[in-house]
Image (cartoon, rainbow, N blue to C red; front, side, top):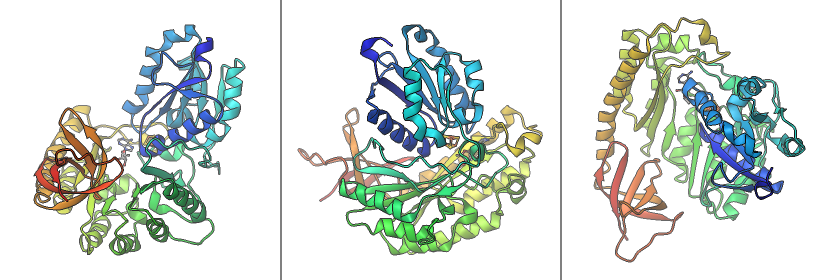
Length: 442
Ligand code: 5AD
Ligand code: SF4
């Protein structure tokens, strides 16, 4: 490597919050090894991609990036693929992109220091890959959190659910939880550092099982929410099957637990849910929603939906649309079904054309947009607490977020500059389907 690039790295992250947080751990580990992070590929000696393979489109992104920068290898740059595509494709990546010298799945990040030494010594096919049975967690000794007020804590890794469409059980291994004591210790350390918002992470966060048997997931939530100084606690992503009433009761009882639950439903048709191996029916899902609708605090609900799963009929799709009507979500992430390697659904005939999937997706998104328009509208006239995230100079507005995880942009009085990370009351004046706008009040 040329001298000035020595021990510099560039890292780009794709995918979910778990990946974003893993990247914070990777950055911390690399810094500990004497590496410095740079902002461009050109400046870097080591170029890393933390990848996602949830849908084919996400997976292709990393191969496009690698192709774009292939010629830079001649300048002595090294390339590494981390995360879910690394774990899924393994050494095949070296065949497809021979300029890659490292492939490392998320359960092997603790071996990064040794792997880096191998690369520094000229290693060209350095691997860190695990089988599904690994017990490794990448604990957080050297986490370099990018935001000083709001941070993630992984409480459970991997997944044992094996939904028919999903690659996660293969890329992130079996389910393994941290002890609640170690989670609380990390949360207290964060509070001491000035963090006021913590988001607990897991592929199925509410499947959490304290290995020491001390606290249930709801009890852990409450314990984190009771840490002095803590203002907002979030958790994602929940699985409906393991979603107990105690979680709703915890949110009702403790205002620091945010009034927002992301509960992916995937389909409104029990027949499709069964084919997806989701382990619940439409009715059971709606029962959980009813608990939340009956809560003393209004709880904002968001979800994920897949359209065009193999065998989804027009009638099944209509049931998904009717579920949107029934629940009135505040946000829906919707996707066209994408066949993934290793998954059980690969054996099913993916007979629904891409055009038909696109058609269903558009119908669903348009419907949801109308619902959200109405949902967001009802906040007009309310005074909501916003955590200040920063400033949008172009709009001349401050950017904030509500406890329900809604974007709330606002103006402040002349000469007042609210500090990022503080909480301010904002009177909502205008609404859009995805954001609110208001004025800070005193
Ligand atoms: N095709 C399309 N969407 C998928 N998701 C997961 N796997 C697939 C797939 N094979 C969606 C689900 C999940 C979200 C993170 O991504 O809706 O909740
Ligand atoms: Fe993508 Fe899933 Fe991996 Fe997250 S865990 S990066 S969503 S494949």
